[in-house]
Image 1 (cartoon, rainbow, N blue to C red):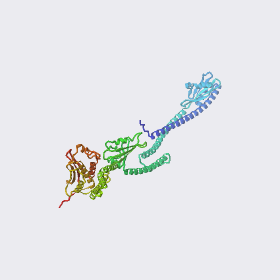
Image 2 (tube, rainbow, N blue to C red):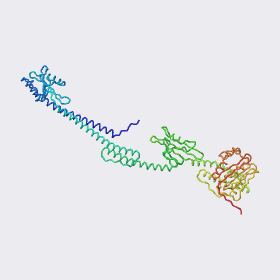
Image 3 (cartoon, rainbow, N blue to C red):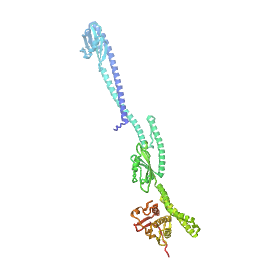
Amino acid sequence: MTRPFIGVRWWLGAAFAVVAATSTAIVVSQFSSRSEQEFRAKAQTLAAGDAVLAATDIARAERNGSLVRSLPVIARTQNLELWVYGQDGSQLGAATPRGPGIALPRWAHAAKADALHGNRTVESTPSGGSVIVDLPLHAGRTAGLVAISLRPDVAAAIGIVSDQALRAGVIAGVIGVLVGLLLAQLIALRLRRLASAAEAIALGDFETPLRYHFRDEFGALAQSFDRMRRQLRRSFRRVEVERDRLRMLLERLHEGVLTVDQDLVVHFANAEARRLLGGRLAEGDPLPEPWLGFSLRGFADGLFGDRAEPAQVHVSPDEEHAFGLVGIPAQPETDWALVVIDDLTEQERRELAEREFVANAAHELRTPLTTIIGAVEVLQAGAKDDPPERDRFLGHIERESGRLARLARALLTLARAHSGQEQPRAEPVELGPLLREVADSLRPHEGVAVDVECAPGLGAVANRDLLEQALRNLAENAAKHTARGRVVLRASAADGSVSLEVEDTGPGMTPEVQRHVFDRFYRGERDADGFGLGLAIVRESVRTLGGRIELESSSGEGTCFRIVLEGARLREEVAV
């Protein structure tokens, strides 16, 4: 439950009002009481003096035997109401200044008893208008005297003093309350200025100075606030400079960096993080889910909690991309967690290219190396002494060595292109001579013919090493699996593209084999002793050339591989 806000001007004003009212009441009460006491004391003194004189006159009249006759005169002379009592308590006489005596008032009976017992007392009535004096008498029959002095002036004076004191007290109290409220308002105003300055500082406004005009405690406090504001302004400016430098550094990082809060709302994302997560990612946006099969939000949510620990995962959302994620949990003094995303696509692509280069080299280089090794062994066995045989085998070695060099260049070109480091260099390629060179290098089964079909002068602009590698793999594969009939290497042009075909009359392929024939390390039923890399290398080479490869085959009806180079530039020489 929220407690109600009570401004300092109200409770401080109320405190001033209470203090002023209490002080005024005490002063008025003391003044009235002392004034009344002074008036009463003066009246009692005068009444006692008059009563003593009257007692002297009464004693004299009693000795002269003229008490009853003299008593009215004494009452008028001393302006007292007199009652004289004998020793037995009987009234001997009574008189007033205005005429015959009256009965002793009931409230004065106690004074009579005091006089008869020999006591002398002086008392005033509550209003102060009457003073009663009782004196013992020892003259003749008299034993006590009760005298009442009527003082309406004293009662009036006491009333006036009380009324005026009350009026003055009320006026003083009102003035005190007003002054208290004014002072409370002034104090509250200065406190509000301090509170407004503190609120502005809390909201980040360090430019507005805090003015102070009086060198009192509030002025000293305002001066301290303003000094704190200047210190905070300098500190925050330094923090802003460091923050901007850090932001610039993070923007230049090659890794994606972003921070999220417990609600998985993005607080910061650098350029690389925005690129990896979809481009338009700003502060305040919810954390997206960019990858199928992996929940980035779930990964970030695990970075919050008392037992959260740094996390690291590897994500491969598809065959083309790979990412490394590092999560730093939220610390007790912060409410956000840090996620670092490293794009491993190029790195893994290079590593894959390196592995494939080794596998491709092992596959492609074994044939020329086997031929060269065989030729060297024949020469060492004695063929070197027979000039015709020696020249024939040296020609094999020379031809295969050249082929080996071209294969190495093609494999390196393929690896660089696959890793994204370098695109293959294109050059004009005469297709007829290339097809005949590939056909001449084949070793088909006995009775199998190898034919080349290409229009004279037909050419294209492409990387010769990659194109030769693809054609040679297709041709050797066709010659290997064709037991009878023929193998045809064919080139044609149509609609701005070049088509190169390798067709055989071999056993063909089943639909199941056709679905996997280009997969790496796949070996069909007819190639159980191979590596399963030849056609995979062909596909990679054709893709690197920017073309596509097509397959037409049926069981028992042969196979045709077709390389189509889309949009290739043609070179045609027309015979004259």
